[in-house]
Amino acid sequence: MSSTRPEINIYPKNYSPSDLQSRIYDVVIIGGGPAGETTAAGVIRGGLSALLIESELAGGECPYWACVPSKALLRASEAISSANTVGGARQRLEALTAKYGEPPKPEVNLEGLWARRDMFAHDWTDDFQVKGMQSIGVDITHGFGRVCGTKKVVIRDWYSGGEVEIQAKYAVVVATGSAPIIPSIEGLGDSMYWTTREAVSAKEVPDHLIILGAGAVGTEMATLYNQLGSKVTLISNSVLPKLVPEVGKTIGESLAKAGVDVKLGLNMTKVSREGSKIRVSLSDKSLIEGTQLLIATGRRARTIGMTLDSIHAPAEGAWIEVDDSMCAKAVLDGWLYAVGDVNGQALMTHIAKYQAKIASRAIVARYKGTYDFELRAKEWDKLVAKPAGHAIAQSVFTDPQVATCGLTPAQAAIRGIKTRTISVQMSGPGTWLHADGYKGWAQWVVDEHDRLVGATFAGRDVVDLVHASTTAIVGRMTLNQMWHVTPPFPTMSEVYTALSEAAETA
Ligand SMILES: Cc1cc2nc3c(=O)[nH]c(=O)nc-3n(C[C@H](O)[C@H](O)[C@H](O)COP(=O)(O)OP(=O)(O)OC[C@H]3O[C@@H](n4cnc5c(N)ncnc54)[C@H](O)[C@@H]3O)c2cc1C
Ligand SMILES: NC(=O)c1ccc[n+]([C@@H]2O[C@H](COP(=O)([O-])OP(=O)(O)OC[C@H]3O[C@@H](n4cnc5c(N)ncnc54)[C@H](O)[C@@H]3O)[C@@H](O)[C@H]2O)c1
Image (cartoon, rainbow, N blue to C red; front, side, top):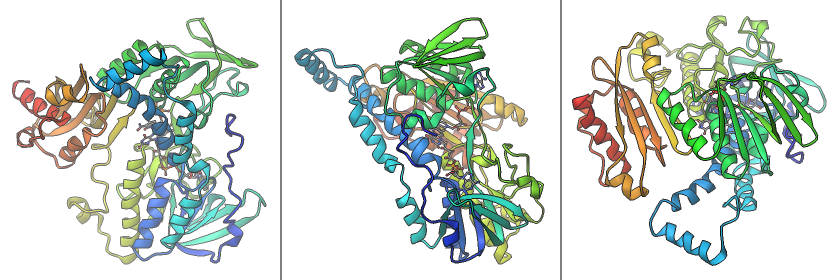
């Protein structure tokens, strides 16, 4: 894979399937990312044995190729930008500029930045993850897992090609995550384009990075590489289309203001590479020449080659539909579960882990014969995904940051929920003390019973603000109840008071 880091080996040779001491486990989990590891830990805690099969690096996408390296990279520029917004700190930076001249571009030190990121990515080795799993009693093996019949899994060793068949007594859990969707564009396949993996593991800053897709990946990577000094062209149908439209507009405008060339409503029709140059043709007949192209157009289920058709599960690459205990709907007798990205509900690490905790408890309860779904669903039980679909939080690390939870008005309308919105500009001592000239925006979505169903915050350092709204949405709190929730002074959380007061007149 990585064209930028050939030294990274994503297929560790140790813990081969043929070394496994047993061929029968209570639960077999395919995929050792956040979802798989958390499921394994959960079933072990419930007294069952577990085998975790990982085809690449144990830990999954998050620690090596996604959340962790991307946020490690974004943080340094953010820290410098924060210092520039605080009187006292800013003058110190200005004094350094007066003494030494203009800071170099980019302002961050690249060697220091790469080193910090590499440290967080554990230099793309997975010993600590493997040892962590083994220390709690999970058996773990490196190899490609596929389902070959009811409660049966085959593991292929990447190196020897040998296969080992494993029998699960109670459940098989598919936790294989997602992979990038690569659109069908003439010439793309021969262009040595980047996916997110190359973008977050790079040790080079392209002169001109062209990005296709402005979802969470495209906007975060445009923010990062713009800050690192690349010329960035961002091409997309829309900006952050899954969030409220105000956010897409804000982030599109702020990226453009920061110097990103944002081109919306266009298709890419052709790509060609010549040496270090990459040329893309757009649907308006324009031609852009850059030095690297990042494809960030969404993801699909990572199930190719897993022979799920043998058990009548969805086609390869399609999301595996699950019930509220994460059990695959299409498979009879409730032995196949799908947790994390692979079920397509919400592609985020915290949701993958939440679903895994539910799945593992449900597996253990079904084994013990104590699972009564109807009864459980009525209670605040840890075996049913209560907030699935309606209280999912996400933080996007653009500049400004975005934090959201729950439903947008459009998503609520699809569910037949009538809503109104309450919006405020973020201001007041908490924000002004945080950053000079602070600008931020917040919105609540409430239903016709005045219950909070959605929330969005956009501004510097808002990513942690959303959690109080998530709590309120899960707890089905009303505006009257929220009015009594008093944030401490002087903090950014005072935006909650502003929203409560605005709700009285909205
Ligand atoms: C650039 C980027 C940034 C992101 N940033 C964030 C963020 O800030 N916050 C956030 O919450 N989410 C973020 N995400 C999403 C997050 O990475 C995923 O939601 C999360 O990793 C999903 O966990 P998972 O366990 O379901 O899948 P994965 O992490 O993808 O793990 C699945 C594992 O299964 C293995 N596997 C696949 N097929 C097989 C097989 N047949 N046999 C054996 N093993 C197999 C894979 O090698 C992988 O290790 C980001 C994603 C990207 C791409
Ligand atoms: N901070 C975070 O939580 C974070 C960060 C990065 C990624 N993620 C997760 O990773 C997942 C994948 O992110 P993503 O940004 O790749 O996908 P996405 O589905 O969120 O966004 C894809 C973008 O590409 C555009 N697009 C799709 N096909 C196109 C085409 N042919 N031409 C032009 N534009 C096109 C869409 O309009 C959209 O803007 C997300 O669901 C997200 O949950 C989360």
